[in-house]
Amino acid sequence: MVPVKRDGKTNRIPDERNRKTPTQKNSGNSARRFENLVLLLTNGALHLQDHFMIFLLKLAISAALAGGIAFLVC
Amino acid sequence: MLKGANFRYLRDPVFLFATFLYVLNRLLIAPLYGAKLPFLINYFGDALLIPCALPILLWLQRFARLRDNDGAPTVPEILGTLVFWAVLFEWLFPRFAGRGVSDPLDVLAYAVGALLAGAAWHERKLMIER
Image (cartoon, rainbow over all chains, first blue to last red; front, top):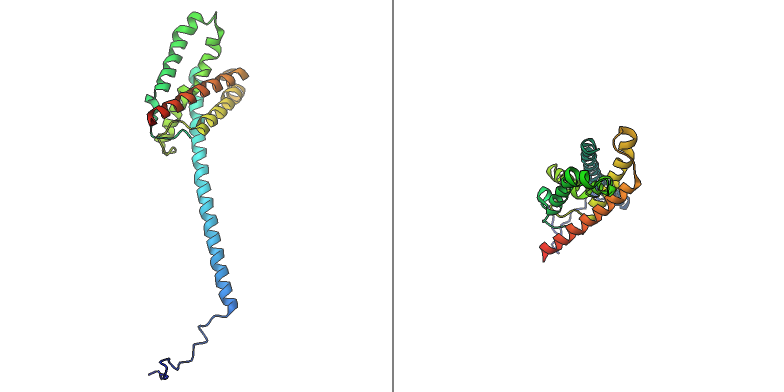
C-alpha cells in the first residue's frame, strides 16, 4: 500500500524514467509537424494527380472526337 | 459561370438546330448556292463546329464520369475546346494526317460559332433559372 500524506497526496516519488526532457518534447512536436506536412503534401499531390488524370482523359476524348470529325468531314 | 442542371446534351435545342443547319447546308444549300456564296462551302460548316460537336464531347465526358455536373457548357469548356480543336484541325491534321486544309479564317469561323453558341446556352440557362 502506498503511504498517504495528511494532505491526501501520495508519497510516491515521480517516475523519472517516464518524464520527458524539454528536448525530447520538442523533438516529438517536430516529428508530428513533419508527419502532418508529409500527409498534407501527399494529399495535395494525389489531388493534383487526380485532376491531371481527368484533364488528360478529357483531352484524349476530345482528340478522338476531333479525329473522327476530321475523318468524316474533311 | 454557366453552371446548373439544365443542359440536355444531345437533346439540347442549340445542338439540334446547329446540326439541322449543318446537314441542310451540306446537302442542299451549299450545292445550290455555294458557287455564288463561297462562304457557305468554306466557312459556314466551320462556324457550326462548336455548337454541333461540343455537346457530343460533353456527353462523352459525362458518360465517362469525367464531368461532374449537367450544367450548360462553361466558358473554360468552350474556350478550351475551341483552342485545342483549332490547333488540331488547322495545324496537326493538315500537317501530319493529310486531312483538311489549314486556313486561319477557319479559326475565326470556329470562334464566331462558339461565341454565338455560348451566348445561346447562357441565355437559355438564364431563362430556365427565371
